[in-house]
Image (cartoon, rainbow over the protein chains, first blue to last red):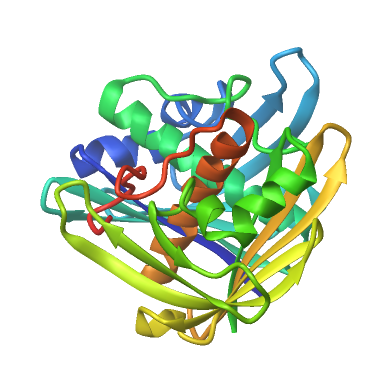
Length: 152
Length: 152
């Protein structure tokens, strides 16, 4: 199994970071504006990605598999790109000095393919968007996310 | 073994991207200003990282293990952080439409540790710096690189 892992530090209380990961309103502020669904353990969120010109780039549904307030959030991908189905997106939170440390994982890819490399780079930019949202109130979610390559 | 992989697209001729990876002058423009050494197959480059306030953050030496003009560059890490020694940093280049596609790898980590997650995130920001350098002439190398967490 192949994991994408990243670390980012956010100068904000851990509760603000947690809320941005565990609610559709939060996720809409940094990943994609088109985020809908629940915010309880076991409920489902749906995310849809369009390009600025309106082209559909992708859509996924995930279950809120673990919700431990101010400690961790785990999403399990239920539908979306074939390579994503069954993978987990994990956020482990801790406080260090003035920063909330986010240990991010997108875990259990069957293999490392070009799409994995695309997603690894793209996740890094979305984590910077998460930081920007929590620190300043304004993230950079799709459709106005940073484009990184020939695909998105 | 654990690999960090990323993909980025750069709107520039492949030869310009290659030069930014295969020469100390190029690397100094996007990774760290303190880059010295050779640009021939088998020669060594040394990179030193300081914080803006002058604190030493790290230094490494790597051998130019593969230099295939406009196709690939491979660095083999010879000295530096213990986790890096013996790992390879790989750049595979190809042209697609108006973009040069960089498939990046930092390969053969013994295990996935917190430092791996830090480096994965940091590499993503340095690849954006590489893109900025090649597309605009101005990258964001250390010591003025984007800080991402409590370590650097």
